[in-house]
Length: 127
Image (cartoon, rainbow, N blue to C red; front, side, top):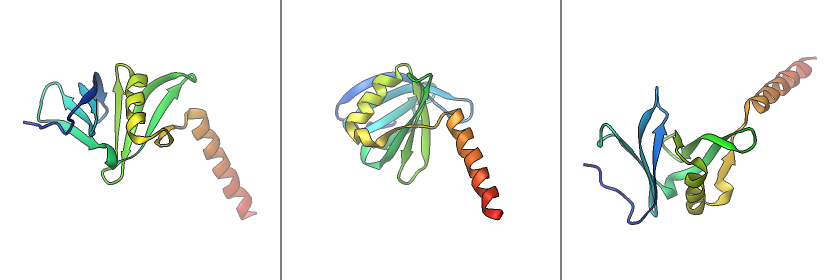
């Protein structure tokens, strides 16, 4: 049985963990860690202590809607989530890791611009 790392839970919310097709469960944000527990299998869980979080990147659509967000850790890679209320979840996360570590990810047009600029610089260096 999974043992929670949190002494106090600030927010419990339905969430989706994006690995493969998606895993549905509950996310608990507390004083010590971010925790995700699978609805179907309680032994399938993720616990990320706040001091292990490097930064959080949020995917923003149309300037205000947050569709999903990812937690980048210092050692174990990244984990992508979506909750029922992403803004409320990110407010709690921001209180624990700091405002400077919550970032906005690049949208499609930004990625396209960066790719074209990279190609342009590559072509102009050859000539």
